[in-house]
Length: 109
Image (cartoon, rainbow, N blue to C red):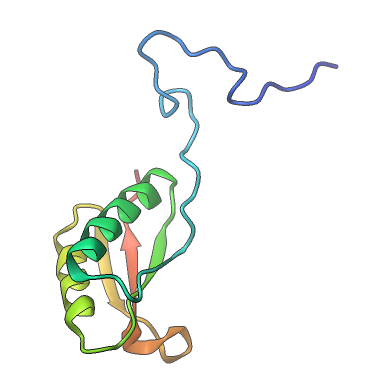
């Protein structure tokens, strides 16, 4: 028997990325809590989060933006709608946080 090699121990072939070798990126988690962020920062960070979630192979995520005045929620939903990684999105159910949460279904990589 021989111990299996971890991804760090596998030699990288010239020009080969970890995706070409079959490894997925570490999961950023199913939820992204952005309560309290300013709109501009929030949009930048949620866009990055969605990119990482797709690369990790997540089928959906929950973006927690809170209810507040609705400015962050509206800006985030506009950014999510324009994001090429988004298949569909909808309000969270009452048990998930209702209008303070947006559930995003992601495209498969």
